Image 1 (cartoon, rainbow, N blue to C red):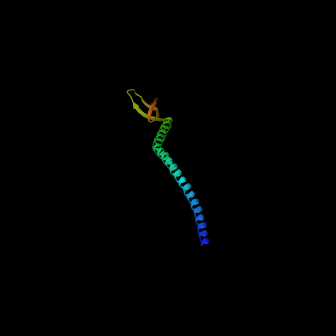
Image 2: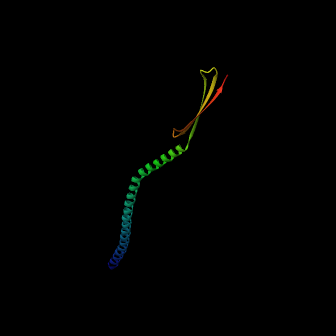
Image 3: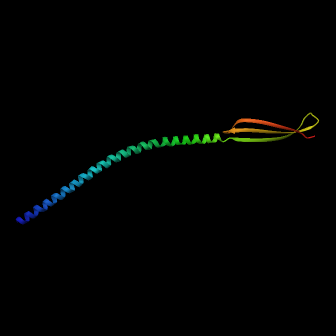
Length: 124
């Protein structure tokens, strides 16, 4: 009987050591879990801030693009040359051919400068 009691005592001792080791592991894992929860909450707060910031940044980027495209469009100048050929019979006894050249410089679809040159040729 004494031998059995000693075996029971040794087994209790071994299980007690194992139990304390498992308890230590559980405590460590619970601490890690709490740290991870705190870290996750901080990340969630940062994510929320970034989500609120995103539309404002997208709007600002769109505005800069619009401004850049507008400036690029303004820098493109268009020169339109129109030639108008007219044959005019006036009160004079001769016929004239007039060629009118109109040069218009456009910026953003608006006339910035314009010049007219008329050449007169006598046909008779």
